[in-house]
Length: 333
Ligand code: PEP
Ligand code: MN
Picture 1 (cartoon, rainbow, N blue to C red):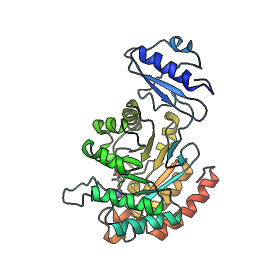
Picture 2: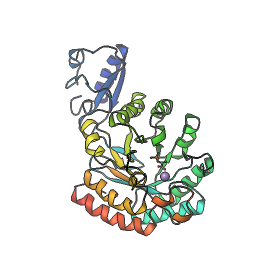
Picture 3: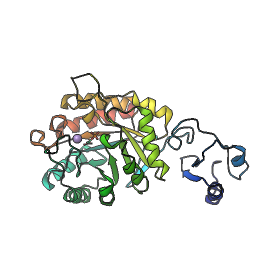
Picture 4: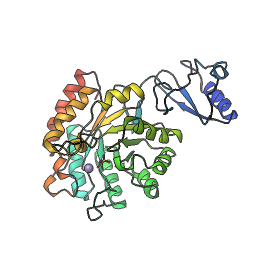
């Protein structure tokens, strides 16, 4: 749409698209609103839309993913969560334990990361574990603990939804719903998250290509939820010195194809505490819109992912470095 068009003009174009039997997706941008059209089986004639008042131009999208592509929306997407904007030059630090283990542990870590300057608290109440005998999460009790930690610290909460059955429950407590690497292609879950009004943090599958990641984001957007953070968290390779291989080149590659913000998770990306800070610094330098860091006050006794958790004082040091690098690359913290 043209810059500065009215709501009515956007609505008129939307109504016209719907009258043609298609779905209209009005995606707001900092300068102009883009309206994506989906549901057509054959290519549409751009001139049919260009004659409508307020339309600047109509562009046929060539990528298989439509709404998340740069072709539909040229400028970077900024997402607002609990009064904080992320993306398009605004950086976010998400930190906290891998899993919510107890009220005491969660509050201790939440207060620590808040004091160091984190913007979000993370922590899983539903944990996807390789072994059915490993700690599976505190579930509803865990969500309540996160809500309590948010109350005490003011930090909005990022937490994972594992399945369609519990998504609504998670959405009630979460400020951002995480969809994990193992669920990146759980299409039912993606569609349901797309019908939910909460921002979604979508992690890249451990063997997913970027096209597959963007197609998964498209599932969420196709249902009307455009508030999507992508997350690079490492992929499987032959290397054994790390748990996964953090693919930092994904950041500029994704930014070329998509307007969505992308976060980097060097905790799962390396699996090793001593490698988390170096890769976190690199993530800021490479242009990520945020980082997600696992922190634990007693990693040796953690119920999951202890070996990759930073101690609070290590996280504090990292925050200072992150601030310096973000400043250098023109990112606002
Ligand atoms: C997590 O964030 O704790 C997690 C399980 O991540 P991933 O889905 O990337 O393995
Ligand atoms: Mn973890």
